[in-house]
Length: 118
Image 1 (cartoon, rainbow, N blue to C red):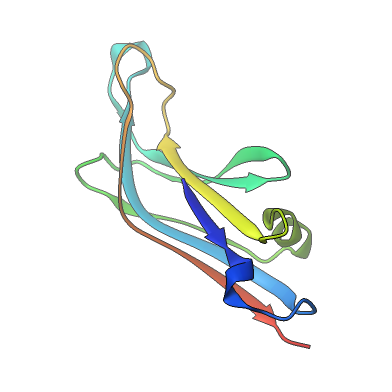
Image 2 (image 1 turned 90 degrees about the horizontal axis):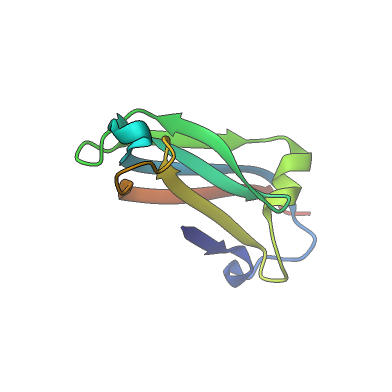
């Protein structure tokens, strides 16, 4: 899980959030029914739920791009949580756990927030 404390950036309270982009290079595997299934879901904490927002089919040993960009003002405003204006992202195997242990690898993670000052 990645937590971004946007309030630590020292921004003015009157700014207008324009977009959020989460960029990860990740891979994973799960074992539903005992069969290896490669890939990861990128999930965003949105309105009290871990919502899957992007996915790839990469194995843990071959991470690749999984990215989500949101510009919808209603969604963007829901992503910022608590007085610290925290953003939460997680990477999970696309396949639910089954008979094996799921695995995720992340080589790179970045969150970009675009905003406009008053």
